[in-house]
Image (cartoon, rainbow, N blue to C red; front, side, top):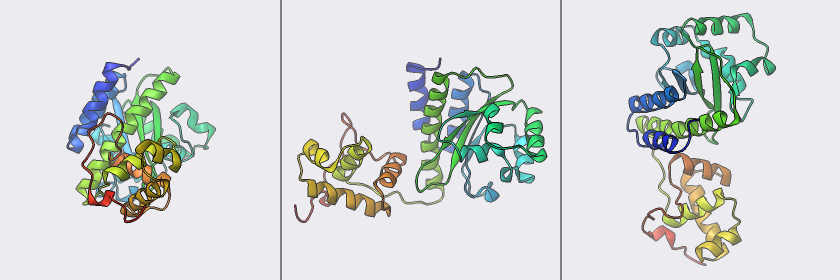
Length: 258
């Protein structure tokens, strides 16, 4: 199975890409090493504007992609429909357990088979404040489904999605808010399930100060829920963990009152 140093190397490669082309090649290379010659990472929101605005990273055959877009297949693709129903990876053989395929959807799968896109595993990717997305790994031959395979595909897909969002936002001029050191530390501890009291004990600050930093972080991102803050900070790689080099303390890390 694709684990250990090979997986770490693949994730490191994906995490340091600087262009969509590099991400496509890195993701495709990782998928190929797991015996999946085809991969497609797609953000579903705005699919009618697929070419101009949506995030699409794929090595699917160009002719199939062109036909898919020209015929607006994204509107009827059952893979996208099921990926919005589930929060776990699923094989294409499971699709009919969740939706009844119409003739035109059967025809879409038939067209994909012409290009060797026959058996697939799709990883739903749901992040608050971002539209639904999915990452599909496909191949001509049947797939032996194992828990470890599903886990590895989910890890790879999640890392690739994070890198793709960063590149996509940069291309479209989205400014990424910058958290201060304390805001980042508090957000990271929220992600670990710590309470405000526990965060205060860990960081050596008052519980009211913890709430201050969390409130400031939410204001920077324009979100209201802590879960949204954590999700956005993860995507933007702003969480400080033990052992990382910490950014210097800024004026924003000094609350007006304790």
